[in-house]
Image (cartoon, rainbow, N blue to C red):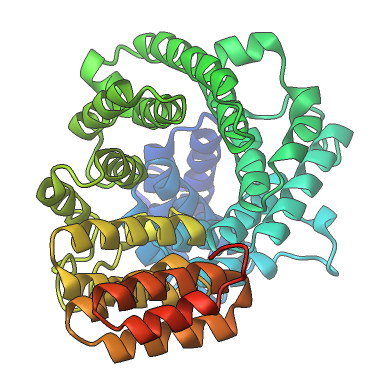
Length: 436
């Protein structure tokens, strides 16, 4: 130890800093941990432990922009053992493929057992966001199995958010009917009443199975449990409505499916008053509101849809292109649904260029979408380009014979409206005899 007045050696400074860092991390004092990690890195910039502690502290403090910049810095690019933390930073900044590449580097001889629970859960979420639903579902099944067996060194109650991710993966993979058998061992009547996330996610399953009255009961339970939990955190009524916006949006959708249109309309409008501008619930509520309104208040619906687009894209030459914060949070089919409904509203508002371009955008990512093909053809007809419209529909019908009936009926109506009676008759004759 240095005598009084003597300069402390680097080794002694490091020893003190590491002691303080260890204490701060053990106590989850992230601000202090960050300070100590930075002091260590100032003395020894290559220290892997300090780098990891700094990155983890930034993430835990919610300093995601700083964490992202640090994660992509040249100092960390070749740092082993930080793949999970760096992947999380890339994930939160929308770089999904890059994040997944980093996660795969943690695989040990190709075995999922070599990963910890956090890595598996992040991998499942990344695959889900990238539209690789079957792979995502398998990851969550593996994670659930390992947690049940105590493969990660403990056997614990499965978290509500993990159950939510499992449910979402099954729904996206079109296997809603299988969800019950998977999550039943982890969900009790008490947890449904006390855990809003579990009640909400089970309501989503009921919606997928068209069990709307059961879904309504579960959503009521989610609302009650959510209010109770958030009141305990001293949130205001307004803040609680923001936090539970997704529950209220789903309740409005269920009301519509049960034929309670007035209640559904009011529910969606209330959600739109409270939801934050970057919340995915905004896109869902706007889409559902436009469907409820139909041909009423078209221009208001168009203005609301435009809020979901990239800067300047709504109604412009490119049609509607969803902003990243919405596009990345919706599945491919959900994106197509929103864009198709925007195109329908634009058609009602005589914005034919927007209809055509938006329909094209849908067909780029979802080439078998018959609704988009028909909408593009309708826009072309409105622009006096009926020959191009009929050619488009004929080409689509030949490529996707399962949609040929719908497309030929649309061609028949469009040709008749344009006074092309011979082509209308030809389209009608192309349909099965029992349909004519």
